[in-house]
Length: 217
Ligand code: G6P
Ligand code: MG
Image 1: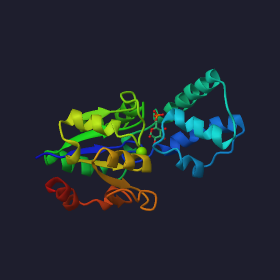
Image 2: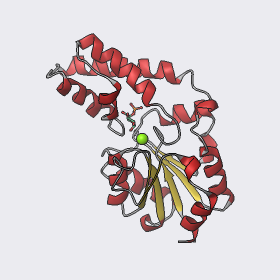
Image 3: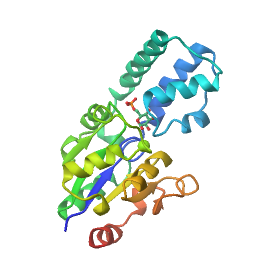
Image 4: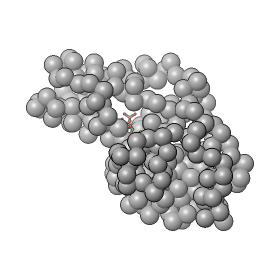
């Protein structure tokens, strides 16, 4: 009677959007494309390649494939230079409490992230051992809202999809969870995440009593 609890990484466990923003901003500046934190919001949960395509669309620009590839490589190196400085201080509020409560109650935990840097980031913040399995952007080919990443995580947890609960901060992630037949819990703005079964502004609003209800349901 175990449930599977699947966590997105960026925006759920750590706030890496600020580092993605700095790296994308530098790239956009170099192309003369205006890019602010408002535009950066549209890249949450979006794959690396699709993100650059969107930035080019913002500037009505196209690039040759080799230049596109070069910029993507540079951006990731730049992003990783920020990740390099991350510490456990950057784990978002009450995430450790929620992870501990669920594992102490015998639940199965997975990470389900689009990021190819997920393992590096978990290592930096010291959360590598908190999950029974990790599925990241190096292991899936279809981006959220396709449910591939969550379906694979559920398989690796040996928990059927209908007994899995997904925590996500991006609309595409909520849709991926819903498409997988899982219970979706939004972390963030309820107007953005309105397709989620529940929405909380952050984990401090998720009580152990609520987690217990999810376990028992
Ligand atoms: C997450 C982030 C996106 C990022 C994507 C790929 O979904 O929210 O902003 O583009 O992961 O991350 P990566 O680390 O592989 O570039
Ligand atoms: Mg996210």
